[in-house]
Amino acid sequence: MASNTSSSRTPPRTSHDSRSFRLRASAFFALINLVIIWLVALRYLPWLDVPGTLSGWAFLVTTWLGHFGVLAMLGWLPLGLLALFLRRRWMILPATLIATLGLWALALDTEVFAQYRFHVNHFMLSMFLHDSNGDTFSFSLFSWLMAIGVMLGFALIELWLAWRLFSRAREVRFPVWKSFIVLLLLAIASHVIHLIGDARYNRSVTQQTAIYPLFYPATAKDFMEKHGWLDPRAAREQGLKMGGSHDSANLDWPKTPLNCQPGADAPNVLIVLLDSWRFDELDDKTTPNMAAVARNGARFTQHYSGGNGTRSGTFSLLYGLSGNYWQFMENSQTPSLLIRTLQQHDYPLGIFASASLNGVGLDRTAFASVPDLRLRTHQGDTPAARDAHMTEEWLEWQQNRRRDHPDQPWFGFLFYDAPHGYSVPDDAEMPWQPSARQMEYARLGPNTDPTPIRNLHRNAAHYDDRLIGRVIRDLKSHGEWENTMVVFTSDHGQEFNDSGHNYWGHNGNFTRWQTGVPLVIHGPGVADEVHHGRTSHFSVVPTLMTHALNCSNPPSDYSLGHDLLGGEVDRSWVEAGSYTEYGILEKDRITEISNSGDWTVYDRQMNPLPEQDFSPAVFDAVQAMKRFFR
Image 1 (cartoon, rainbow, N blue to C red):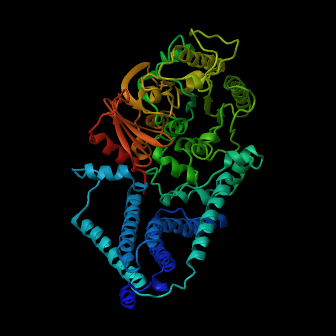
Image 2: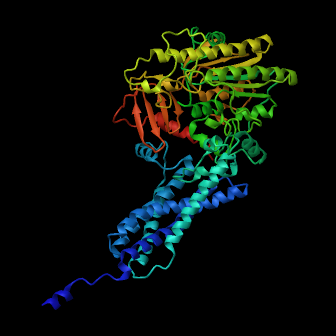
Image 3: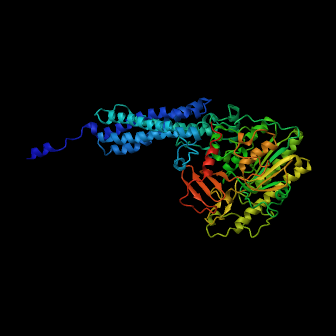
């Protein structure tokens, strides 16, 4: 009886259905698919900037092999977990499904990247589902059949591979685990190469990163500088000496070559920014010097920055483009067309910032082509002290310029920081009371009285206005004021819980309090008018290019903006970005979209509006975001 019971039991598993065998077979399946991944990813290559250095090629090889290898290993993880429990033949179906979906997602991403220069995310999928009229996504019957055919083709290939590996009891002799280790080491090497290349302004390395999906390369510039391992200015100058193109292979920008012919009497150009200067802080009490200029120039009361933070705000101001272009400009170190045109016509450039330019990437973007760029103001223990010293340096630069280039038009850029740092000297005039003496972030909350803090911010703006008054008087005393086109504005706004949702500062939402900024333009030919239409930083560059540099191109050739002095402008929507999100701002709502693709619709007070579809403005914004990609 015992003998019969024993003979009826299930035979023990062979070594070819052991857990070890299934893990090795599933890992080998992932490595085979890695070869297919490399082949599919070749569709990214048309958008790759070809490396011009040995380090660039090393980065390309290690990233191509290592990063896609890591993605293949991540795709293997669920299959590896199943291999711990499922029998060998039962692995065929999940292996086929996981690999087919992964390859199809990669193929889809290559197509999306070719069209929009960003990778597939939740927002793109949501737009596709809501695009009932085909305004943004229009596919022919052939395209649909091709997509289905690709999916079926992947499925058949994967089914055949899975069947070959898991249906037969063949030992896998390939060194799968050693291969995994090599791929991981290659991935680590690519990050090390990027870390060094990024710190040394090596465009041949940095310009490649955008094409890789789910790729977040390592950087350590601040860490290296802090420990004395990097001199940013010396590294930047060395990067400029390496030469090479400042243009990205991904960009079709400008659409046609610029035709700019500034005459012998071309005006000077001066851009003055106050960091975090709010739209409602341009008045006789807060900023009397700039308010006086505004009464004799063009003032725009419904003006918006292209961001709620410094990086996106200054980018939109100096390029006339939305923040989604920033990565491509930064990776390839492509300068602003405004700056490039000024250099082509031999304008002396006086670029002065209180805080660091390299902290927000201006040294690698707008001013990437400027040699001997002054990266920051070193003297001064507070933002207010640095602002004062920066003003002195500016006046000294003007004195030297008048001696060396007395007859040439010039460009100036002054970036003040006191309002951002709530910084006011102890002996400074403080017209707004009651005022806090310093900002204490730990005490901020939903029930905090914003008045003292708000007044401190106003007093900081007032302090900088007095410094700017010196700049204005210097130009007037030397007879240059009337032939200087001056722009007063900010990089972003500043909120003091205005929405009632405990938002303080900036980079938190896209309400007017964080994105609305003053804009004043004064200069030859500028009428003293108040414009109440909705305008954007996107329009500052085309205005300067048209009226200061005499460019005949339409603004649509190189920007997303309009000529602000060519007639009343009133945009139905504006776009603003941050470090991790961007928003479409309409008159009655804000659509906020994260980099991961999640999106939410709010009213102007940041109250969520549930069950909202995308408005036509969102589809228009997406089209604008792709206008200058090849």
